[in-house]
Amino acid sequence: MATEPWNRVSIPRPAIQCQLTVPLGDNTEKCMKTLTQNCSDVHLLLKSESMKTEIATLESMLYVYHHKLCYHKPYLALKQVQQCSRRIKAMQLEESLKEMIELCSLEPQLEGPQYCAVPSQPILELVSMKILGACKLLVRCMDCCSKAFHLCLQHLLLKEYIVLNVVLLGLLSRLRIMCRGLLKRLAALYSTHIALQKEVSDLHKTPYFKDFAFPTTIEEHIGPIFKDLFADTLKNLISKKHYGQFLSKIFDTSTQVEEDKISDEIRDAVIEDTKGTPGDMGQPIQMQRFKRGFSLSKKIQKAKQKAWTVKMQNQKGMCKAVNAKNSGSRGF
Image (cartoon, rainbow, N blue to C red):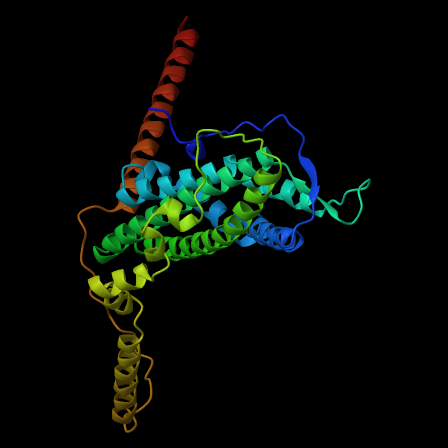
């Protein structure tokens, strides 16, 4: 079974002219301005430093903990999040949006003010297909973030890798919020983009994807789950499993405050009891030390004594041999 066009790894760019000159309609100029603004918003989100930092943090953590947690369930869920982010980057949606901004900002040079320059239908269909694929990938990425978030909470409840899981919880929540914001912007961009695409198709029909019917909205493309994606599911998940109580127990400072109060009371009581006692008499305290069966210093000392004994015996033997040799030579 052939895959859908929006699900392809790479979509070839049509070898056709990128721009057309069409008569200026009632809403053409307004649609072009709105499309340019929406493309700029999505383009800024895709190349933002915050998103690049979060993805780079995810990549580095997966690289560092590969040998330790390669069979861990949260690690496998994080790998799926990584695959979605890499797939979105491989789509080259950022480059296509940049090209759309440049094409929409150009003006016709030969025609009069009653004409305007718009992108051609194949270019518009290519960008529409990339938007549809990016929305599906973002939905998948949000689902993987929710699963990884749930698994990290389970391991945090078992007190396994506490620091790592707390860091991953913050990372996953931020990635999910960024994906949700990007999905909203793409939905707004697609509604304006598909309107301009239909207008250009009515004036100059040159379809690039002939056997595919473009949906009217992103909600129609994703399905009924689109509305549920913008609900605060992570908050409901935490309140349902009562994981917040465990985190508050780990990072609670009330017990530390109580311990400090008790230690202060004990110190005050000791100071009051020692007010009438004389000062330090300077007598040393004899501490009882338990004898151990093995002493490294004694072992080294015995080895040195043994080596010294062997050395002295060798020297005595050499002296006796020299004396015997000298006495024999004199007798001869």
